[in-house]
Amino acid sequence: MVRIERQQGTKVMQPTIASYTADDFNTQPLMLYYEVTQACDLVCKHCRASAQEQSHPDELTTELSRALIEQAATFPRPPILVMTGGDPL
Image 1 (cartoon, one colour):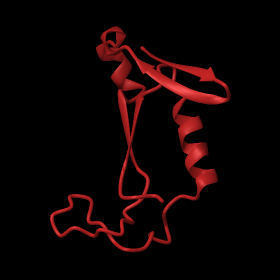
Image 2 (spheres, rainbow, N blue to C red):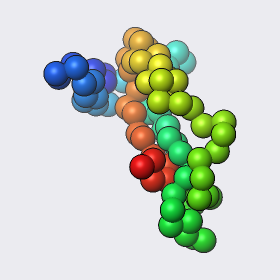
Image 3 (cartoon, one colour):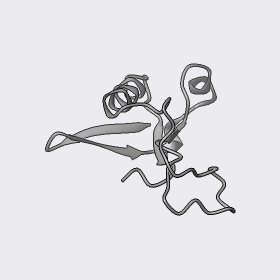
C-alpha cells in the first residue's frame, strides 16, 4: 500500500509495495512516472528524454500538474509517484 501523509501542507508518499495484490493492478497503477518537462539547458545528445532548450507549449502548467498528482492520490491505493524529466528551473 502507498500511504500519502500531509506534513505541514506537503504530501509525502511512503510506499509499501508488499501489500499490493494482482487484483489491484486491474484498477490502479503501482507506479506513476511523470515527466515534468523535456526542457534542459544542457541538451545532451545522449539524453534519453530528448531534451530541448525550451519547454514544450503542451506541457502541463503548475496548476494542472498539481491537479494530476491530486487525482492520482485518489486511487484506492495511490501509486508511487516518480517525477522525472529535464531541468524545470
